[in-house]
Image (tube, rainbow, N blue to C red; front, side, top):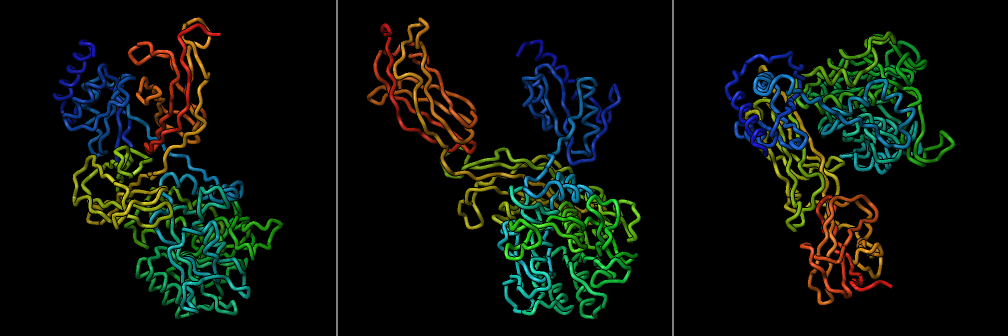
Length: 622
């Protein structure tokens, strides 16, 4: 570091140390975002030194951008204003700026997503909401005629199934069902496997499913079976229950089951019906049920078939909705591929149920009453002939109070194989106020791998970290694949228990890097600097991204004579150039040498290639 730069940094830090916490900035400061943490970028001479000095004073300062002349400081929201004042006093207002937040723009790659699903889910702002919450950790129960649990868009999402009539876990459709495949269709709209390059996307991509079959052997569904299904789903962990069934006649047992679910903090969503009248349909019309009416695909008007009236709570698209179907019952269009496009409030209901799951995943402590009030208060003000308008996922996410912990993994891909290279991953999380924290690890399909692990009770605001060694609850190394590490927090705000959740995605990869096709550019080279084969390229090919690689050259006795090193490399051929000398520049005698490549993938798995030969000649070339 130049002395002048160091003096400037010391002067700035002295000013920082003397600045009063509430000192006003010389210029109008940037607005402080209402999020868990705020990051300030500071342009400073000797940025690396300045960052170290700030860290010694307890600030989370980073020198990652030091080579660009910046340092960054991340603080909790409640001290952001005072920190900004200190930084601007020390470095000058022009040198301090708040770093804007960036959010992932998530668009799933499911083949049937565009254009119909994109239009329907876009109209209720589901796509934008997925950048904040996707229903992770929330279970939606679907009560219907039957299901194909093994459908590609449901497999892995189902955490439980039950047949009310047979008292078994087998919930397969019967050919005598009123509408075979209907249950699979409804469940897929709510929470289909998403971003898996096939089929459709679920409106709550991260939610889990409980599937409850209510049809008997003749395909008949009674209100008694629905009532029993409500009770079973409530007792088995459902936060939301979807019922896309109905009839104009109410039933005392069914109403009692609705009350039972409500008393246990479960939200029931039911389809309003396709009768194109204001005649009440049940269970949708019970007071404690959220009833869903249908709109056209873009949400601009009520669908012509939808039932209506003040007893219909909210609206969601229900026309031309892509759905999944068992192949056996995929007879509604020309393509027998397990997918189709259907109409009905049956598909408006799971879009509403999914909204509740998304909101609850961001606000785990939210009660049934709070959730219902939230989704009804944030609808688009449009006259559909319902009690409220079109649901709005994004608006609903902004209403309920919640904590804002943040988390990120220091290493995305790691390899817990005890080789000393990336054997663990560390999640760094930030609490914006005093909270209690618990860690859990889930598979990509939501199965619990590890936890809950208590990270601390009433932890002060600040930055913390937790390291996962890749092992599950039984101490076994978890299989290769993607995992989600969640840090769930809790605190009391104004006497109310409020929860928060932060998550980081990681991947276990214990498979050795791929290296093949080892070869030299020339079989013989002549490093005489005369322009003819003065250098030789030595390398191989790889089918995965490498974080580092090297080429080792040995004599015929196996003694290493030179090592060439390279950095990250994309898929394809990689090579390093050898000039026939050692690292110190000494000439290596003429002769035949062997070489091999060593490659490291993103998880630091090491692969040594086969050996090949190259001949070095300091004599005249042919």
